[in-house]
Length: 308
Image 1 (tube, rainbow, N blue to C red):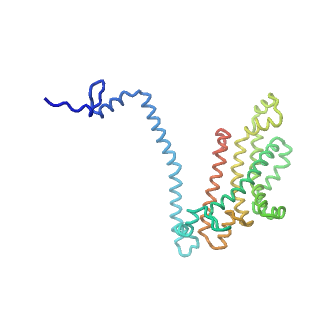
Image 2: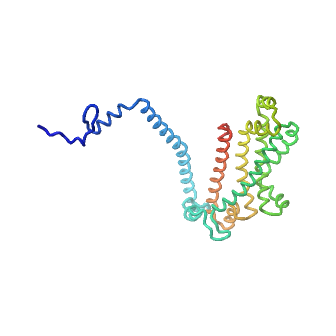
Image 3: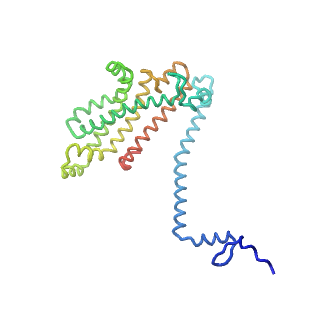
């Protein structure tokens, strides 16, 4: 008679002792249908998320690689005065990998310079946002104010940022407040114009509700005007923050200091083209993040109705 196998190698089930693999399969077959459907849905969601991330990451990555290859080939020409990507990697590696070094008052990493510029942008843009929303709301509510001020605003908003710098230097006699004024005067116009447009497009039903509730001017401003015009306001804020970042870089080239704009100007005077290219990449990335930040805040504040 054959000897019975050791029971430790088998699993006891209702059908008797079975090998572990058979027992596991049996248990899987007895799982409730809703549990298996839930697992499949979760797996499907994960797969869709992976595809979405890949669709957003792979195309820009491929385009970037192609552009770098073209750039490398074009810069390999002996007549070209621009550095190639490989040359930039060799010459400005410290700026890329060590953005927060400090070797002296002016010998600091690009990270510190970007933070200095961002501090100025934060102050100037905050003032522009506050003034722009209030003035835009007033203009949007008054036809007389719109007819009188809109042509002036349309003219002033086309003035380049650097054109305001001599006026601000003459008025403030100091580089720091002059740079803040340039940021403010550059960023305030799109906020005013978009806010006024949003106020004018408030549905009449909202105005009727305010009359029924007998809201005073301040209550009407916070409870009706601002929520209804929020998508327009955040569109203006996104444009304004981009112009603010553009303005501070241009202003710092002339006013000096330790900002990213002055770094570019100083690198040009020292013929450090590789450093300039790295700084431009920093500027572009920071500008992109500022835009995404305002867009994310707008999406939360407007419950997804603001443009992403």
